[in-house]
Picture 1: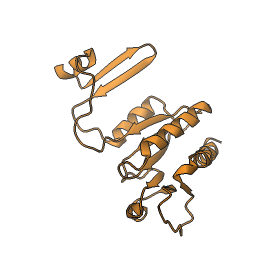
Picture 2: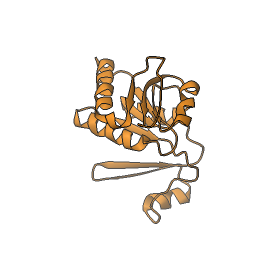
Picture 3: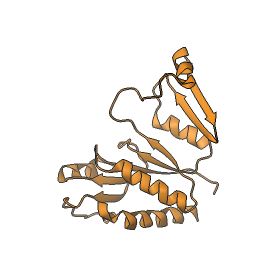
Picture 4: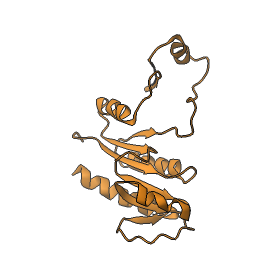
Length: 173
């Protein structure tokens, strides 16, 4: 595939369906031969959980900035210390030659966004966020699309994912 990294964000407020949608996108893209990386924003505060007692946690507690575990074809990377910005994480993915990345969260970043709208109170995001490429509404939302942004209902996930696949395929040509 080569070339530059393509990034898509999935954003919305808590419990709007972001993780479920990201899982469906990753499954579909992977099944159709596209390798994809993901980045998730832990927006609920607090430290990330890791499995206590493992060697990698012991390495972290000893002061390692990065701790990597490899086995059975998998690699887990743990990093702590300074705050990791999205830009720094994206640089790591670029170094690893990941060409398609889906980001869950990080609303204020400027990448192309898919916005999930769970209720009418969430509509303010459409005025506050930049670079919106699609809107997905729950069935109880009344959304008047005056901007021509592709809009789908949550239960139309297969139609949406097919649309997104077509958009991604255009980028890869």
